[in-house]
Amino acid sequence: IHSPEYIQGTIYPAQDFNPCRDTEELFGAIQGMRCNKDVLIDILTQRSNAQRQVIAEAYREMYGRELIIDLRETFSHHFKQVMVGLMYLPVFYDAHELWHALKGEETEENCLIDILASRTNEEIFRIKEAYFMQIEYNTDLQEDIYSETSGHFRDMLINLSQGVREQAYADPGTASQDAMVLWEACQQKTGEHKTMLQMILCSKSYQQLWMVFQEFQNISGQDIIDALRMCYDGYFQELCVAIVLCVRDRTSYFTYRLYNAIHEYGFHNNTVIRILVSRSEVDLKEIRRKYKERYGKSLFHDIKHFASGHYESALLAILAGDAEDY
Image 1 (cartoon, helix red, strand yellow):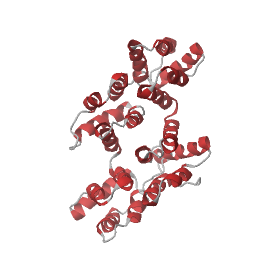
Image 2 (cartoon, rainbow, N blue to C red):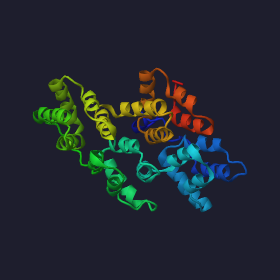
Image 3 (tube, rainbow, N blue to C red):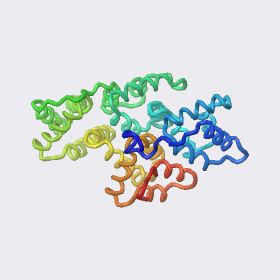
Image 4 (spheres, rainbow, N blue to C red):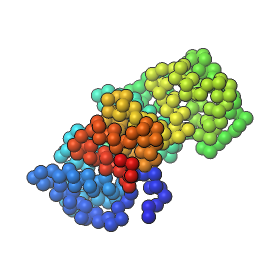
């Protein structure tokens, strides 16, 4: 019987967990004459993140080595990304992804959008701490956002990274006023109006925004997403739309992002890996269900079509859980 927090995830705590045995098998698979990737997949994708942390500690005590470093140095390409990603604590994984999105060869704006538009205040606060704590980074998230992005997109990211969204607050009396501000922002499109739009989308509670979006529909006769896509463009538009989608249904947002990453961008590996790893103990089972329901083909089918080898096997193992919808 799985605890409630794992119901919508695909990775659960192993019932007969033996960290010493897992550690011995992993060490043999990594250090052996022929690296056995199948062993890594069988163990690391079938243990919860908390259990992986126990394995990492056992690996350190038994062999005087860091498992995550051995994985980085032994493997390569996308298979390495998956295995290393699984070994991070979730908050450090988010921080790691944000840092690479900001400080990599090219700024990866969609990664910044995916994480900062979808995380709670508490999660963002912990991500900022983790971002600063990592020895190889030792920089401030907001400072890096400021230096690596620009314009109203940058302002909106910085606003989100402050983690100051109102919590569980809803006032029907101001919902129509906020909706009117959004409508004017879509009509006028000045810098001042963009700032006002940003303040509403980044600071109002989800409960309040639900009512605001309904009022917007009543005032304009348009869905807020259609209006944003018609009136704005670029990453600013994508970030605004991401916030609206996350307010309405965060799981559906990640379903949509996976489909785009697979079909619109020629299989964008970083996005596929990030979503599967980060949502594996949160809502990946529900994402998997909605994907098939919405797009007519299962995630298993689409990943098999575009990925291959042990990389494909690792992704499918994360996705599988107790799946019946292959």
